[in-house]
Length: 335
Image (tube, rainbow, N blue to C red; front, side, top):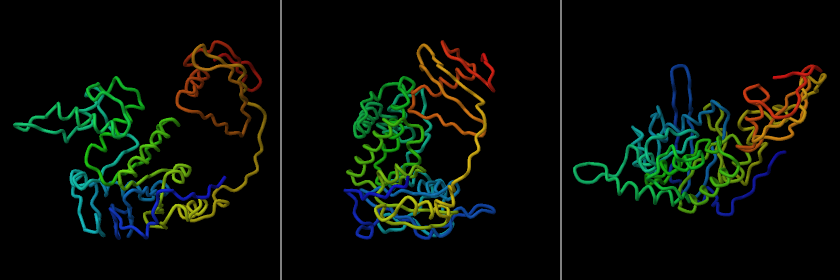
């Protein structure tokens, strides 16, 4: 079902504000490949701009340019209307640009505070790391995103959700004005995703400009104020999210209507190949039953911890179920 964009209650129309950060006519080429061709992008204080595009559209290249990993071959970056050049990641951090990636490298044997300030820890006399100041600053940064984590705790003692919060705190440990979120919900449960949405609202309230990259349209229409669409390294469109539909975004992304991308197809399903009845495990899942027919794709979904992986491991013979039966091509199977 297609979603019509809903206007954000706090959004200001983009044409009424000056961007905090802007890319103007940026081009980036690699041998035999033009990754970006004369693209522009504007990020506004207190607003979320969704960067949308297929794989290979140039989104990752933009992130690397904004964080100082790549330098553009043409065009310029502006902050508050003034040209600036990020020759290194340190330059981008000094300018207040930070990124929260889908997967951030953290170190289990270091404390939370050491992970948050790795590479830019506060220093005292003689240039030595000021551990007390680092712990206190880490505590303040964690509290600012609603994380009640002792910064002296070793990272390996935390669960995955809290490790993600540490990664966010690490990105925000600099005085960021621009926050880039690159597929931040890919490995999160629904509860953790909702908490991330709350964090985004907090960052907006602090006046930060947010670039949000996601393939999930429900997320884009949920939290974005503006959109920018790239296709094959070129800018296809941008504007207020309240002025565009999901179908229009898809057409800009791929150059075709939704009806052409997902045409109705005739499905000729054959006989049952796999039948599972009453599959159970003492601690992981109970009473799982389904059938799979030839020519059919059957999807299993659920939140992290719902038992999907554990069920598949039992079905594959890695663990042993406590009850249930499996039939393959009409014959009982013991796996």
